[in-house]
Image (cartoon, rainbow, N blue to C red; front, side, top):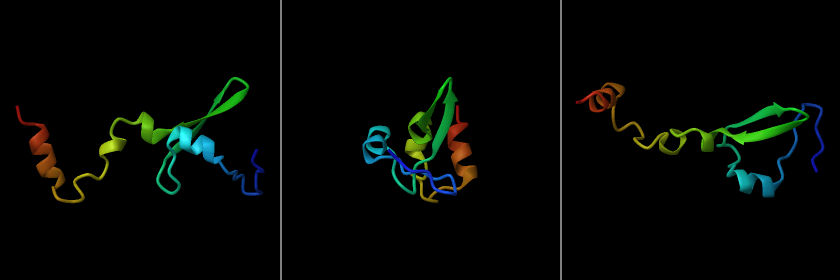
Length: 72
């Protein structure tokens, strides 16, 4: 159980964070109203590009990436 602060913040229990793969300070979560309850979605897990975000670490320019992806 979590208490909601005056700013509308509540702590997500560790067991739920672990289950959803939520990393504090890194994960992007979404709250969705479904009927009479709210679901928390880890947007990083539902986003197929989240796993590869930042892997180039600035080694390639956007133009170089576009050139590689548009070959064919």
